[in-house]
Image 1 (cartoon, rainbow, N blue to C red):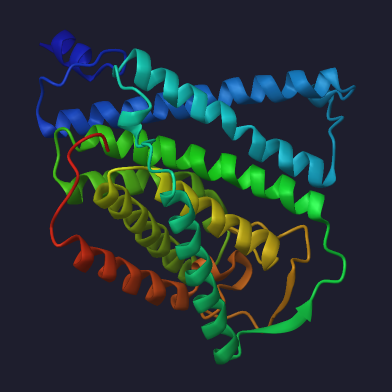
Image 2 (cartoon, rainbow, N blue to C red):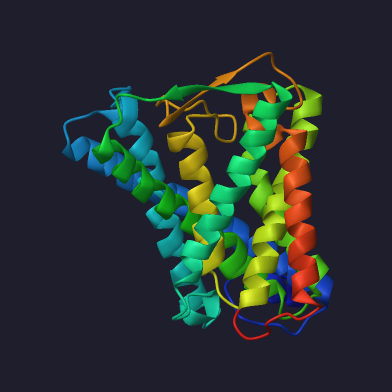
Length: 308
């Protein structure tokens, strides 16, 4: 019996002949396997690239500045490739089943949602006095913005491919929509927890709530449309606008650029999310709740059952 259970839960087969609970465990194991392999392979590739460029990363000789940051984000290509390979050879799923349909225009719709949401959030923050607009940068580097835009397109898409295209899509075969959304949202939130745990408890709690809210928004958009494009666009645009256009902290990482729009953060409070940034703000919580409510109402209970 033990051997049978182990075989069923193995991430190296496509068996679905098990209970819903066992299936969820199986897919979480598969997700962790893909995440771990991607990290190991990505690390090896980056080390190889750095050695080829004359650095010695194993002995601490590393690049600094923007190049080092960009290299990290471009490394997310590996996460996408490993996820594609797992889905293709183990789950027997093609790219379309992951949500990459011909309706790529959804990418721009998602990006627009992110831009509007962020400007509403920062606008309310400014109105509340928790942050202020100081002006506009006079030293905008177009090349740098393009490189960062591409970096966040890669990183945002990779996380959506793993959490929504792969995990959410797989879970929908055996579980309910709420269960699939909660489990995939947990997988989405876990990598963000270390930086959140460096914040004070109140900010960490609000940040975790916001992670689940934004993940629920992304998941329901994917399920409603039946494609992954809108989630990729929203996720990537959110990160790019917050980090590069506004120059604010992204998931606790302080932006290395001053941003196109110059914001000044006043006294740290739950309104501006303190050091973690507006992603740990209660204003973001309220905006995400309204957005989630609107999506649920628009859905009217319908979910696409083909693909994701």
